[in-house]
Length: 228
Image 1: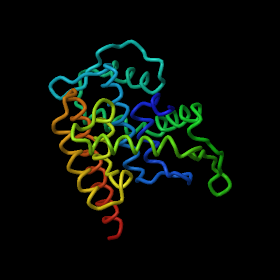
Image 2: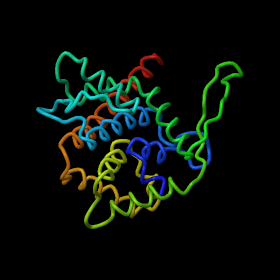
Image 3: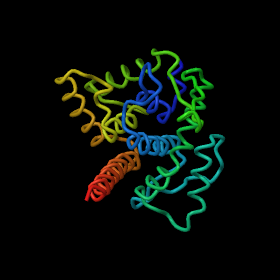
Image 4: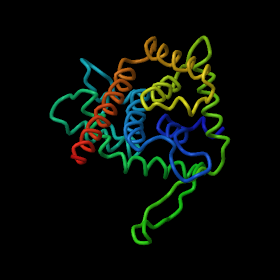
């Protein structure tokens, strides 16, 4: 199936995408930090980065073929010292527009989305994405929800995806039933806490949450100050 060839960043964007309309169903802030976190989690799962003393370290400086990961490897290799996860989450989040564009380009090549050329106010060009079919998205959501609710818990890449659901408040994408939502929230927190995978996964998820909360707080303060 198509979704078997998708990484965490691609699955994240597909889940966050509206099934019919050319937009996303979570806020741009969650998209920004979710993409960043998903890419770092993919690089962790691929063994490209590791964590020591809460700092992300490159395990190899060999350039990956993927344009996004190549950009991140370059940035990390040029850093004058090892830096904490929080630093990289924030720095890479500032580049999320190009990363989002690259991910959507890849999904277009896989015939999962189609891109349409639009013009804002009839002047400023931009591209809008639409899901071509619903099966891939539905199956990703179905498999993830089943993994979370399974007594054995999520495994593999779905641990990373479950963490992004928690960090970006995507629970209602998985279910609209109140009782089921409560079970999913409880299970996701347990999965993250008991995760057998590298500490970098848990730390990245936590730093995404911190960055989102910090950014929302800053935006709220700025908006409040503008009204006075």
